[in-house]
Image 1 (cartoon, rainbow, N blue to C red):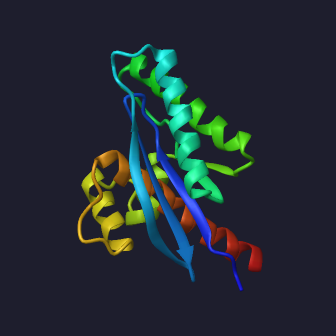
Image 2: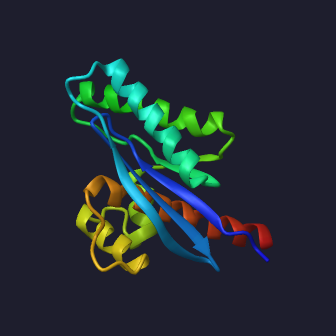
Image 3: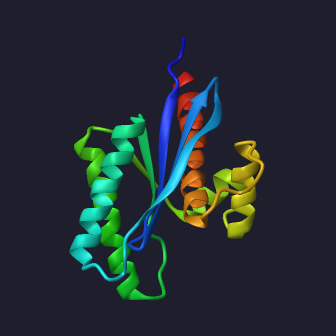
Length: 168
């Protein structure tokens, strides 16, 4: 019998990092948990990164995912913001790698394509698909957590395609 796979999706940020955990049961995604890692603006950049690392370790230790999927940086209007998010992404990639958990990266376009079939879908359309795919009564809040669940669902879809490719 196939093992159930737990996938942790991460929407990187410095102030708020969303995370969402799904488990694939009989090929279907099931919501396990979601939340956010928040860091105060009053803390130094270094202390914020330390908090992100500590909180992510706690999520990984609590839920023991088999895979981690992280949204890739795509385009930022503000270079200063992009650099800070890139630093947070570095931590978010490093911590699961240290624990020998496979890490996968997906662009916003890939995530939108996987969930809606359209790479230019609006954020709200993606969130509605998260709600529908996971059979939830409402869209997960805050948005960062819903976005993280979209990343996890993108990974789950990618896994299905990879398995099909291997069987052919």
